[in-house]
Length: 432
Ligand code: S3P
Image 1 (cartoon, helix red, strand yellow):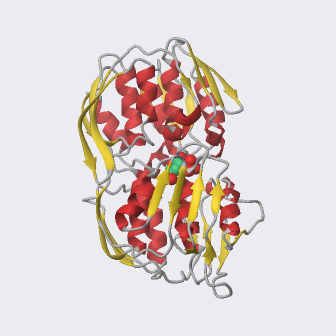
Image 2: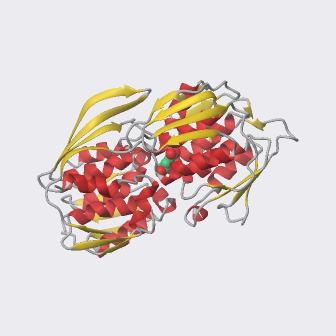
Image 3: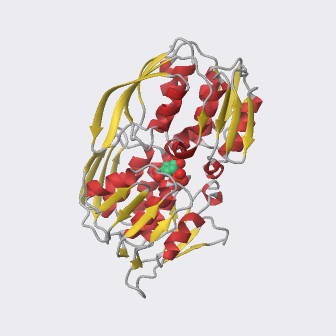
């Protein structure tokens, strides 16, 4: 994919449904009694992996790709059946980690695999708490990564045991995995994280009828609820909106309206950081969409100044850091991103990949053990960018390329399919 420098971006755009919420709608719908109807479902490859896995577990799911409408015919908490084959999660960490929590509560064996990237990502972080609950979950290559094998311990011991888990990292995938296993445990299960990660599991499980509470950074769930099918409308994904927020701010003379974006406070760190940098972003038509707030964002090109990004803000913008690094290249002064070592274990090592590619474009950027330091204000020039098949890297550089002199080539650019299949055509529609 080649991207060139562009003039002002103007227009109205609607980004696709939230990836985290789309995954959960299928998972929780499968565990509920009755039908769950989902609108604005994300048709990205990751969410299609979740659908495929739950079909293999015996759940009937209709996916109307033309209307983004999904119907899940749930079978209740104990209605999944033993898959005949290994479950393949593709590139999706959310699928692998959340489904593992569910599978540890079943009375059948299962195994999980995914693509090359997922086979390098750490799964010890879920195997540890699940083992503490009495589950038998193993890394088949004994390297703490997938493929994973889950043996049912539940014929010997009637249920998993509820635990209180102090998670060493703020991760919604770890938290959700443990809470989902808690549905099948004896007694309550709770997870405390060092700072609060996205709370879609807590909000949505409660809507489905689970007894789940949150106090500070601790979420607690009671077992054996009677989950009931729901009608859900997935908000637009703020992580996908981030690329158009950045494009609107950076390309001089731009004005973009991004409709129906989820602004859950556990996800809106990108808006906080843009504000700190002096961005002109207005929120309009704020409404509550079944517990998940949404708004239209009006973004106008702005002169940005450098900022500090760290601490409790990090989990609220973890997937947006590649885009923030690009914003920082155009901001006056020195931006420091810290407390973000988690970036190393995403779809790629996002610290190294951002530093390497932005350096090739002429940026002044240095990697640190837990983030990066960027001295903004140097003009970028075109380069060949290796996205490492990481969707967020490819999209971040498609935006950087709009500001760079020359013709930027993005390798493996089709990986945007993971979370935003129409990304390039949506971007083109704004550059008239
Ligand atoms: C997600 C949680 C985050 C995020 C990922 C989606 C989720 O991962 O990076 O894209 O849906 O729970 P971690 O929990 O590993 O931080």
